[in-house]
Image 1 (cartoon, rainbow, N blue to C red):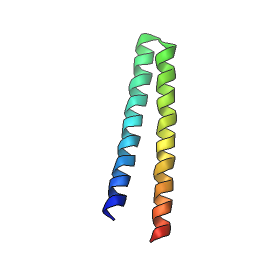
Image 2: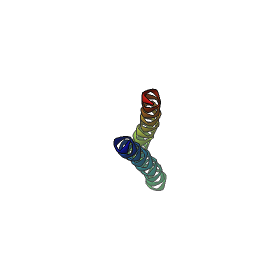
Image 3: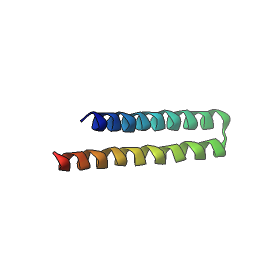
Image 4: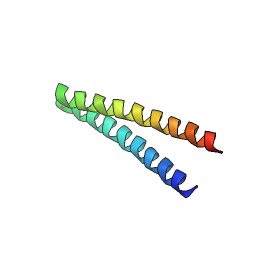
Amino acid sequence: MVIMDKERFALRLSVAGAVFMTFLGVEFAILTRSEAILLDGLFNLITFVMSLLTLKVAALINRGKA
């Protein structure tokens, strides 16, 4: 059980970091009017979505073990 809690914490931390970097990247892109920074922010948005999917898959796998 402890390993699953650590895994869930790590995935949630990844989601939080991706959200933070997405907002930070998009905000800096707006402030600097830089398309390159906007692209980086959008890549972080993709990372956020993938992290959410990974969190959901991990929950489904853990539910199957119980």
